[in-house]
Image 1 (tube, rainbow, N blue to C red):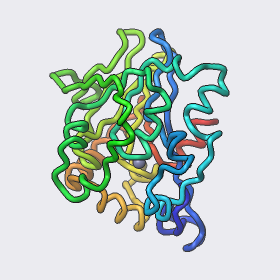
Image 2 (cartoon, protein in one colour):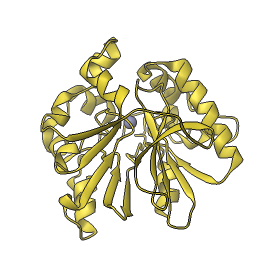
Image 3 (tube, rainbow, N blue to C red):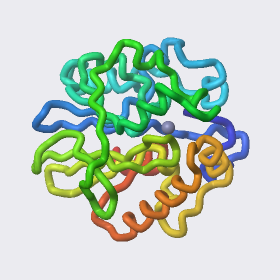
Length: 259
Ligand SMILES: [Zn+2]
C-alpha cells in the first residue's frame, strides 16, 4: 500500500512521496501441509472489490502477481495445498484473500469473529467486511486457555511439539487481535505481530514511531491503552532476544526476512 506522506508514515523520504507499506504474510511448509499466516489482499480486491475510500486512502498496488494465491502458485503449489490459514485479525488487508483458498481451515481468535459479527463501536462497524468471508470458510475458533509462551498467553492453533503454530493474543488494534508464533525447523521462534505495531522502530530501541503512523494506529485501535501496553511487552521480548519479530506492515522487516 502506498499512501501519500512517506516522511509522516516512515520518518524518511519526502512529505508527499508515497510510503511503502507491505502486507507481510508467511507461508509455512509443515507436516500438515501448507499454512498461510495472514492472506493480504485477495484476487477479488485486486480485481476491483476494494472500497473506493480504502483505495483512495491506502493506494494499494493492485497487482495479481503479488497476491498470496499467485505467489503460492509460483512456488509450484495449488490453492488446495494451503490446508490451514491462521489470521491475526479480520481487517481487509489480512483476511482479503480467504476466498482464494476456500478449502482451508481458518484459525482465528474467537473474540475477533465475535467483533466482526456483532460490531459495537463505529470503527468496528466500519472496518469489518463480511463479504470477504461470504463463501463460508471452515472457521476453527480458538480461546486462550492457560497456555503460555514467553510470558504471553497463548493457544496452540495447530501442530505438535515439533511443528508448532500458536495464537498469541495481542488485543488493542482490534478486539480479538493476536500475534502468531511459529517454531522453525532449526528450533528458532518467529512471532508475526500482525498490526500490534507497524514499524520496526516501535519494538527496537526506545519505541519511537513516526508521527503520522502513530496517529493512524491510535485512530484505528479499538483499545489504544491495550495496544500501547502490548507494544511495550513486545519491545521487552525483542530486547530479550531469541525470537524474531515482524509486524504485518514494516517494509524494513520484510526486506530483512526476504534476505
Ligand atoms: Zn493491517
